[in-house]
Length: 277
Image 1: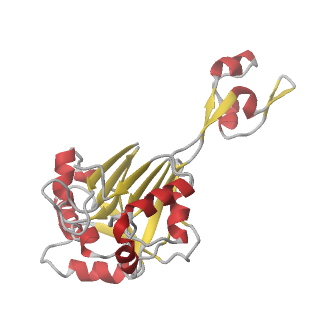
Image 2: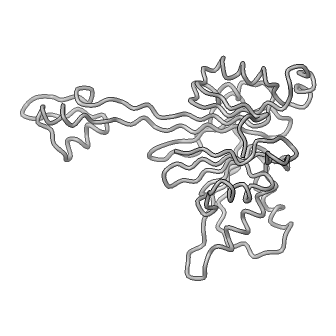
Image 3: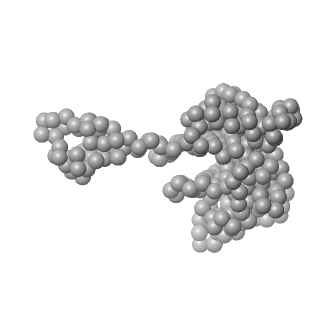
């Protein structure tokens, strides 16, 4: 698992920091969270092959979070050759995403060579909605409070069971179907003796990553942050101008830090941001 910050600035890119984009590489999956202008260039700088992108997750449709989409779509399509099947990109976004994607594709003249599977999400306030469930991980979303349809995302790696083969062999277990059952948490029997998974294995807890981009304080932000190993959280305003943050549905640095502390997040990257590419 590798997480790369492609942009950590707010509305306007600076000489040192691009607008929002976060890339999570996990096994064969390339998960891009938001795609602000310049995202492709940032991927070049970070050494990320754009063809690795398999899923795009949009928090909301403000320009600094989506204006790099059209360029990325065109580039990925153009990298297909005549002998290859069309590349498929799966896009998730809040309410109105289908309509806005249609409009986006009308802004330029080009042949769309991608297969785009678009999922429009409208989670209930205060509830986590599971949107992807793979063998090794799942992703949840919930509503945030930004004045327009806006959602946060939560990547959860599933727990895995690690077999202690020395202990297993001492009990007569070797590689094979019985070990496979133990791996799935199922009791087995050998030579008339029951062997439980706890006798020969331990659980390795999966990692949780919460992504909260652009929101005021709300229950949804707390749900995304809860028990996260890493919380990525916006903080567009200094604590001295909290009233302005509330009016614009953003968090202050203090509010973001308190959100992390109250949610038992183990590590936090606050978006003013402190990391940069």
